[in-house]
Structures are given as C-alpha cells and as structure tokens.
Length: 415
Image (cartoon, rainbow, N blue to C red; front, side, top):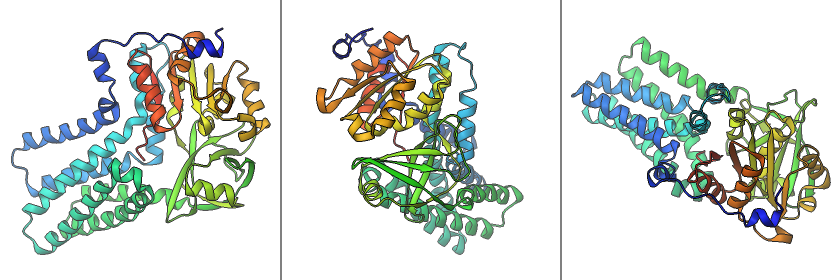
C-alpha cells in the first residue's frame, strides 16, 4: 500500500489517443450529446415533413415540451437509474461505462425545451387566428425568457432568480399551453398528453409537507439535520428541503443508517441559504415529492469503486460507504475533519472504511486530487471513480481520469 506522500507524487498513465480524448472533452459530454440527439431528431422530422401543417407543428411542439418536463419527473428519474443500473457487472466495461452516464438525462430536457420552443415559434408565425396568435406570442416570449435565464451564465450567477423564473414561468407557460390547445379545438391525444404533463408537474407539490428536524452543529461550518417522519430513503437518494416553499429549494444527499429508521442530511456553509440554516437552526422544515436517485447510484454497475470527496461532498458518499453494497475505497480531502464534522462522523466513516485516505488540508495543504484518485483506483483494483466535490474540481478529476481511459463520474450542475 502506498503512503499519502507517494500517492501525491504517483505517475499518471498516459492520455488516450486524440480521437478518444476528443470524445471525453467536456463539450462532448453525454449531456450535450443527448441534447444534440433530440435536436437532430427534430431536424430529421422537419426534413421528412417538408412543409408541416400547423397541426403537425403543434404536435411536435407538444411532444418536445412533454419530453422536457417528464424527463425531470422524480419517478421518471428513478426509473431511468433503475433501468441503467440493471446491467450486471459481467457486461463489457465500455457498455457499463456508458450506462453510468445516465445522470446526464438533463440533456433530453434541454433538447426538448429548445426544440419545443422552436416548433411553437414556427406555429405562431403561421397562425392566422387572432386569439391564437395573441396566446402564441405570449407563450413564445415566456418560453424565450425561461430558456435565456436557464443558460449557464445567468443560472450560475443568479440561481435564486433562475429558480423562481423556471417555477412560476413554467406554471404560467403550462396554463398558456392549455389555453392555446383548447382554442385550437384539440383532439383526445393533445388533451391526454397535456393532462399527463400537468399531473407530472403537480405531483411533487401534492406531497408537500412540513416535518420535524433535529439539527446538530459540530462546527460553525456544518450541521447534521436528522429526520424521522416515517420515511427511510434508499442510499444514494436526495431530498429537497425549503424554509419558504414558493421561493427556493435545496437538495441534499440522504444518509440513512442501515437498520435504523430515518436519515440525516449533511449541510455545509456554501451560501446565504445554508449559512442561515446553520446559524438559525430550524426545528421544522418543508419537504416535497419523493427521494430521488443521484449520481452515485451508478456504483452497482462496477465490481469496485473509488469515492473521491472534498469537504461536505462526504455527505453523498457516506450512505454508499455505510451500505457497503459495492466494495469501495474512500479518498476524502477536507480541512480539520474532526473539528469540522465531529469525532462521531469521522469515527463512523473509519469504522466502515479503515483504509480510507483522509487528507487534512489545514495540515497538509491542498492535494492533487487526480493523482490521489488514480493511486486509490490502481491500488484498490477499482473499475470506476465517483467524485463528489465542487464544480471545478469534479470536472478536473472526471475529465482528467476519463482522458486516461478510466471511467469517472461526478455531478454536472444542470439543475
């Protein structure tokens, strides 16, 4: 077994060939490929239709926007993960490597939204009926606003505004779509699809409830929120919580303890909302919908995995380490772990991961996480690496390893 210092200086394997490296470039990640696939399919349909009728354009717009909405539905997300991880570990690694990218399904959402808005714009331009044109242009302008504010430059800088525009704008757009459809004398198919979409949007809110929470604060940087309201979520799922249901929601990884009811959330200081939660610990909080699968659920596709985490990224990793469904090895870099997260949590981790590498950044400085990840991957004989960290480091680890032919996974911040 190599020491921490040796891991830090381990020689990385050479990068793969230029064509393979190109396919692993962030611009060509599966999220963007799926968006391009949806747009290409629509262009092919347009070419085959040649001069589509207004009804055909309406159907195309409805189909694309339904795809954009339904693929974000919690039950659909869980189903996608279940189907993708159904493959046994005896399947070729290349196949399992691709199936593990299931969490890029947001590309379908993007492609469907862009294509649907484009079809609806074309439909509105060709519409001659005055009431339909009025509703059509209003809806088109609203869809353009939703799309523009969902683009990364706006979303990353003004996420609270993005969330509100997406929520209230989306509800308004759905109402306008119903109005436009009813004015156009719809058939049973249009009504059925819109009904399914409407139910899909409403379903999480039908499960809105305020529940008790017990908050422990081991340090000013982090709290452990404990829930026991009759639900014990599966390992690798997340729960959305809010103090103001109509304003903003934040999702955190559930940490159930095997054999015990309830679960924990690890919440670290990362902005105004989390800072307020830590400083003014609530005793009740809003939750909605169902627990939803996250990226680390793809672990079952592999015989062994390495978890790479920094700071509070240990939260999404912890339930998998405790469940021990797949042999794993942990690499965790954080500042003064026992002071920040408490002895109990660190001891709990070491009890299930006695060979874990816990790198204290306050004592040893910031490590080269790509080298640490590769050293653990090599020493443990793993098939894949799962990284839970901030955006910059996650992409650095994921793309740094994948360009060297190593399956690697991490969040893509598309919500």
